[in-house]
Length: 166
Image (cartoon, rainbow, N blue to C red; front, side, top):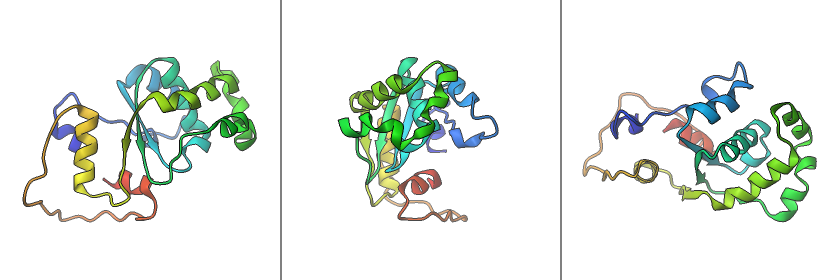
């Protein structure tokens, strides 16, 4: 909703919107996404399909932004070297035309993409800052914030849940 308020050209697709056919995720990233936003949680790099989407974004030169949540760390050489042991079924990507070499290159590439830090104390100001950065627009917070009739519950210890709730 916040993206839409910045203009009709800003839309969002969450890969969790359609998990019935995971093979379509790579097609969405390569053909339907202008800016690929990685939610850099502490576990994102060990999620096979998420990393597969990152590989496709890199290979297809899709503009990519990394939101770095508390606990996220860019991979080091040891992590990249042992990746095939951390995610043993990474070989499944061969049917999509890439393998461990492309995965390791993507892990290195992550350090070169635009990064936006996400505060542990995520609030409306944090959301405004992130949307400002993603859209290259500027909106300041109103002096008085509006209240809603609906509350969304999310685990405050899980930054990925918090960002999804917003």
